[in-house]
Length: 64
Image (cartoon, rainbow, N blue to C red; front, side, top):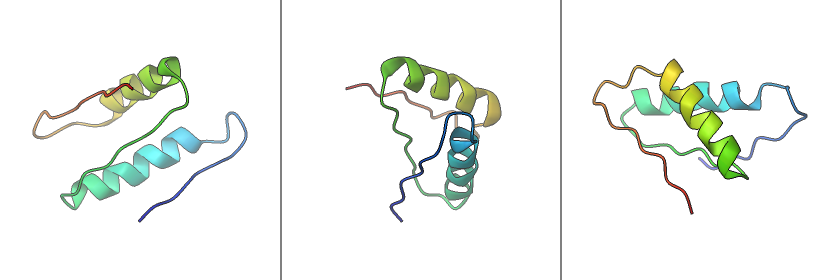
């Protein structure tokens, strides 16, 4: 499934994408989240670490 989520600032795009990613992870698949800037990517990564209780301890931040 490939989807693009768009909306105004503060409309809940991040939490919607993290909840969707959690559903995908529970089925045993991988997921990724892209951000337009390194600062926003770091903020999303830190939020995801707080929200998710990673069972296997695998979490990775990749920057390009």
